Amino acid sequence: GAVVSQHPSWVICKSGTSVKIECRSLDFQATTMFWYRQFPKQSLMLMATSNEGSKATYEQGVEKDKFLINHASLTLSTLTVTSAHPEDSSFYICSARDIPAPNTEAFFGQGTRLTVV
Amino acid sequence: KQEVTQIPAALSVPEGENLVLNCSFTDSAIYNLQWFRQDPGKGLTSLLLIQSSQREQTSGRLNASLDKSSGRSTLYIAASQPGDSATYLCAVCNQGGKLIFGQGTELSVKP
Image 1 (cartoon, each protein chain N blue to C red):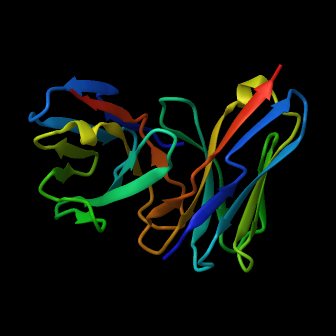
Image 2 (cartoon, one colour):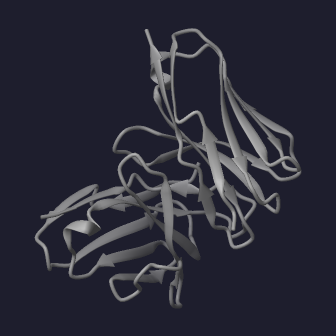
């Protein structure tokens, strides 16, 4: 299957700082990528849809000014958590499809564990 | 609003048993349903993808079924092994390509 890579796999930052997470499609081009968040023992919640060359589409309740998404190329999307606070500590995962259609398999990155202290 | 429910939340079985994980969804207007495996602290590994027009898919010891009209899917694992221990997630895909996930079933296979 297609490979999606996330970096870093874990990060610890101080409250008030910003953290950038990268999501790369290694062997395919992705016009759309998705960002999810997962709290311990809970399922994945979609945060936003990242569209190459245009603004991201955020789900209801997700602050777009806090979670900045940039999809500057067909193989890279970034999520920046700005002015991070302890409540932002979570597991963030991105996904992409190698074929831009809903009826294809979604591939996921390995996730990024963010801890804000 | 689409809601996905997985039962049971946790399951513990002895090695060698066959088992069934259940997934239900409230809106039958889906494009496909996908089953994933997640190991602790890791990302998701895709196991099986069933298109809305299909009834089942098989991969090795795994078999997934889909009954779109009743909003149900099952994941059957044959001859379970300790290495199968993980959290299993089902997700349905809507028109925008978004995946809506269930809460997962945490499976433990005891040697």
